[in-house]
Length: 138
Image: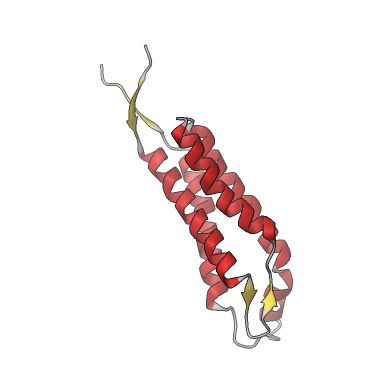
């Protein structure tokens, strides 16, 4: 007899929330087309959007198949890789801000996108280590 029930625990809800944040980050990045700052530095890269929106699709598919652990891993890994692509693509924008070439500082669009992507990654990491189903009380 299994020691878990069919009732979902915190880990599944954290996975769904991370997937939704990933979707929001992907759509937002596509809407602004990765353009930041007064210099209109373009940090757009298609794999960023594909990974972020793909994390949502993959996670929802795996949750429907009741593979909660793999869904949590997808919501952590895919936004994490998207953040790495983003860091690689936005290096020059960040250095422009730090050297004061872009004198207005970080663009609010940059902060919003970075916050959404990091939140999706961190909540996905939390979802990996939390219980996905509630134990059966005997």
